[in-house]
Length: 207
Image 1: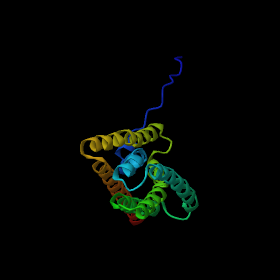
Image 2 (image 1 turned 135 degrees about the vertical axis):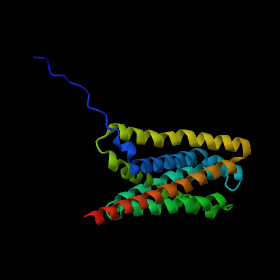
Image 3 (image 1 turned 90 degrees about the vertical axis):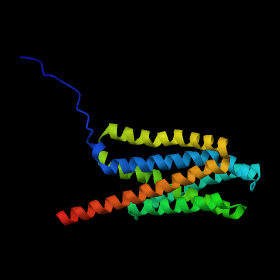
Image 4 (image 1 turned 180 degrees about the horizontal axis):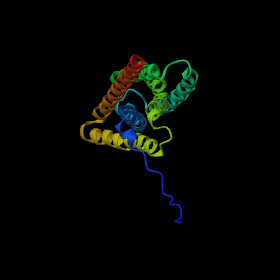
């Protein structure tokens, strides 16, 4: 008798045809792009616009991380009380609004308020977006790897793009690129929540 043939389990690529996977990957890409670009260029931006002193500018970076820590603790508490879609939507709107406030402000108080809002609303987006996208790839290591890689790519590409634009046209032009990414993040969140609601309504009709 021939020995039993043992082969590797076929890789499941079906997740590549699932809209929820790509929406989750888009959210992660835009979020990591935003976070890394803000962290990488925040101090330089505040110093160059001349509103904050060098010491105050450095302190803003520490304040951002503190806010994100507090926001993640709040996210743990909210996790079982607020639906994933609502949390993402509130975070997306809050991040976009407070980043705009910080970007257009030229006095200390609104800049600090904007930064605090950015940190708090940014804190829970990554784990919530990853949970959203990974719902359709449970047990699929390749799918998880692609989703994580997509987000990480944004963290490499976008800060470099901001630096290139800042070198060519000034730091404010570079930071305006981050404004665009916060807007794209909000758009991807809106599309994701709409997609989930639509799929839920179709399931209910089919029952």
